[in-house]
Length: 380
Ligand code: SF4
Image (cartoon, rainbow, N blue to C red; front, side):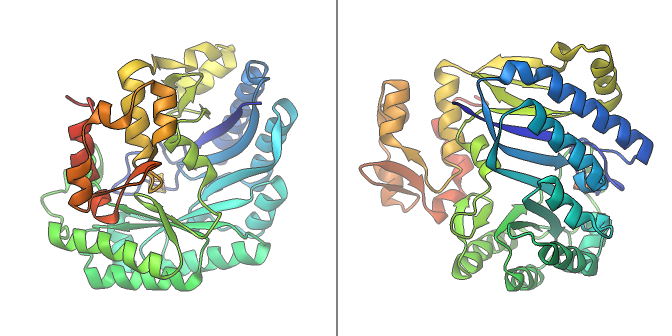
């Protein structure tokens, strides 16, 4: 039976962080309850079309999923179990903001079936958190982390950020050391990007961002320190203890099926990408009217050259890289026939090539955008 991942978007936040361009907004309890009801109705409505799938990952993303209470998680996951075939050992992740650590929340999440937490920390320095506009301090993160461990979570990921205004290589090193000392099972470390439409974009002239050299040093430092601490660097921004990669995110990079629910969610199902407009009011209205088809917008079939390029672009984010036999089997041509002789890149230390696969080295991964844009048609 083919497998499917569900992405459930929770479009609510306590307030907007200054760098964030995800779709989310402040809200109240009544709006959250109405939203959860709509999400359950939407899940139940599309379930008959998914009879041939088993669900092996569920991901509550946002926004701030932990603004919901544990009863909301229970209702949503009961709906998933009731109308879809959810595998017994499915990975069920909830993103968690440390500002939402209500008493009993962690126990409630576990009881509802959530078995993996992804906690957004970004930095252990109060000044950096403040500048980012994060609604929590480091102390709140520590309480949340310890509440999650005490409740019994044994699969926790922590999100970090580098390239923050006023951040130094030293301060980022301190963040890394403090987090690795806690020994979470998984760590994600992203470089800050100033996205258009965010408060940071409007204030960009006033921000003192680390220069290119400092940012490159930070990127090198994450890889060196986390691998020395026993984490495998398995994706450009992600590190995991053995066997504890994010199964849900892996399906994005492996080009496997996933179905997104909620405003702003993206999907890839049966070879077609589509999305739902980032508009909560419109989402609620469509669900109320039973107009679920209108929630599959901008469908794009992925085929031909685009499919090949997308396959390479996504797989090369992984240090496993492209498996050459799988590439030939899928596309009826060899990788190098399609993208050229990789020998100079291997000799330059950017790629490793074995009889079975081609993958970036750490050095290559840091300039992967340049190499990929040379190979692929995207944006040309
Ligand atoms: S908590 Fe996350 S989703 Fe919400 S505003 Fe901050 S970065 Fe964006």
